[in-house]
Image 1 (cartoon, rainbow, N blue to C red):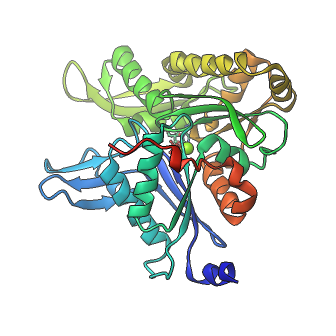
Image 2 (image 1 turned 120 degrees about the vertical axis):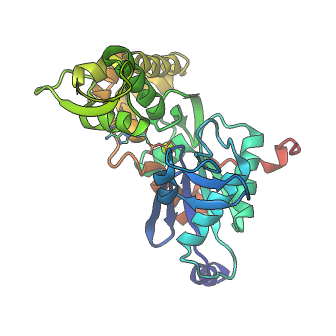
Length: 350
Ligand code: ADP
Ligand code: MG
């Protein structure tokens, strides 16, 4: 009875607190928010000026006293207060500003390997933002649930989620993460690789947005049937003046090769420490790729070549985590075992 009434008066939500974007799923409605994880702060007053898409537009264009921060980029929560502000803005927006009687129940996805202190920070931020109940799930688990893999069965499943700030590699069985690795080599790092490459090869300085659009438009880890190229504008390092250069897929492949090797090596390392029975399942069932990095052309070919395991790219890989949190939310009892609920075991906050 309470459950039913509660459904009418509250907007329960699943949140993917990603380093690049934050997505919010509202029970019964689907994904209602998909915004960059960026907050613009006025350093003079400490006030939040803008959140999400609006704040992202300000990056690199702000007057001295306003800074655009990506609160999650250098760690799970590198800036606690700003994260709380961002969550509270998003919770409000997801509830369309309506005042609800109970405050939402929230399921938040966090990177694997997160420390207890960081989990507490996430819980506190969500509570501070108005959540009544906060449940935490590791992102690889949420991704696997989002792509309908049988995470609660006694069968091994491997997911590789390549996001903006971090890549998460995890093997799951019986509702738990058996092995995992979280590395700081992901989409942002690839953008930096492209910036460095263009600087050293063409003596031209480009910004992060240009690098990202090159990666998406012409990046390919395998030789494309038709060569891809794009012309971009940057600052000539010698003359200081604008200059246009033509960059090809071969350039991007070269620029990304070392970081891609690092990701592939980490996948192999996780496979090496996976127990034999679980490994056999993974070999049979394949590795599932998600996150924005799953969309890099040739990513699955490269992983297959180095692991000899079938690779599946998730449908709509940018939303699998939040869809997973949504599935959990709609049936919390069923998924209790996959949640991190060890609040009592947490060390005292410092
Ligand atoms: P997070 O979960 O950390 O917020 P996402 O899973 O949303 O990250 O992925 C964001 C990253 O994916 C960014 O670095 C972005 O440049 C990259 N990305 C998005 N689409 C593509 C694409 N089509 N090709 C290559 N990279 C992409
Ligand atoms: Mg993510």
